[in-house]
Amino acid sequence: MKKLLLLSALLLNFIAQSQILAERERSKVVDQILGERFNKVLPELMDRAEIDMWVIISREYNEDPVLKTMLPATWLNARRRTIMVFFRDKENDTIENLAIARYNIGDNIESAWNKEEQPDQWQALVDIIEKRDPEKIGLNISENFGIADGLVKTDFDEFTEALPETYRERIVSAEDLAVGWIETRTLREMVLYSSLVEITHDIIAEAFSTNVIQPGITTTDDVVWWMRQKVTEMGLETWFHPTVDVQRSKERLVDHITAFSDENGSMLILPGDLLHCDFGITYLRLNTDCQQMAYVLKEGEENAPEFLQEAFNKGNQLQDILTSNFETGDTGNEILKESLQEAKEQGLKASIYTHPLGLYGHSAGPTIGMWDQQGGVPGTGDYPLYENTVYAIELNTEVEIPEWEKRIRIMLEEAGFWGEEGFRYVNKRQNELILIPSEQD
Image (tube, rainbow, N blue to C red; front, side, top):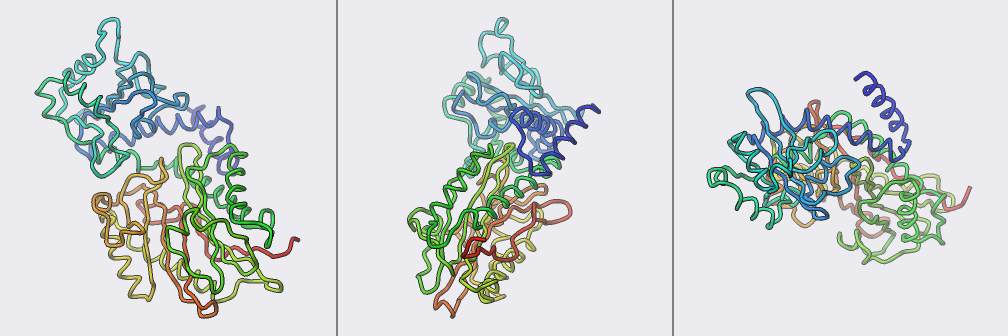
């Protein structure tokens, strides 16, 4: 145990210095985290959801999104038909992690099927269920959360056909349990997350610098593909194609879709431009999602015009409004409504579209608005806020700029954590515009 804790401490210290681990070391971190999650997080979530048995079924290359997050580092996919059974005995405070498979699934899930003794995999599963006699059998069936809706029809039909009628009546949706598993972060994961966000910020800072941008020559597409290539060379992954867009004096403000898509086309970056990027990476099974803004200095300028920095400050103001309204138990729709009302009272033209962030980029948990649903989001917006969860604090505010004879949009996104002590950013946030000189040093 001491050796394991020492190894863990050394790895976390290495990661905290923004060093990218080799694949072998990554696998050790991933599997250690999985062990903690199975032994500490899962029992609490099953109790909260009031489900004493969770059955997850997948076939190779058609994995349930939840099951995929439970596989050990050396399993890149499910094998044949993979069935996991988690049984929670709350009275004795125990949990069994079983696999109706020919072999153990890593160190955390034990094989419970001897095919030579019972050739029928479905009957082996039924035997496990009958022996433990659960009150509720949770299956990953969900109307609101795609991530929690991973049980395919074929597996559902074959499972229920094999299951005695007595137990069919005990089947319930495991939506709350599945979402809880996806959204809940451990202390160790949060240490890693801080490093992930720092790496993300560092890549953006280099992208928005004279190392990459030469005004009058570099295009927005050049910066996008530099970011993609940088991530690949670092041994990381991007979970979505980045965007870089431009706002400038007297040019029309494009709509939200255009700003975040290729429809705006590649633009030449010029002195006096206000730049914006949307960028995220994947590392150690966690995801970041970040939007920051920069200003390209004109000749003779040492700072961005005061009116642009003041506009940017309104973006920070909107962030503060939103995060001050986080309250455990409140739904995403309640937080959205209160925040938009408060923003309006403070004179902001606000749009909030904050989403859970973690094992997936657009993850499961309370949706706090969508850019085209500012009146609330049925289903995912009705899910409550729980502690130990992470969010992409994503939003924008439009600001009138008389000097440019137009409105501009301040678009920001930063990873934020909600825990017992309230809200905090995972690793700081942008407080002022990044400045890009027009001339090379």
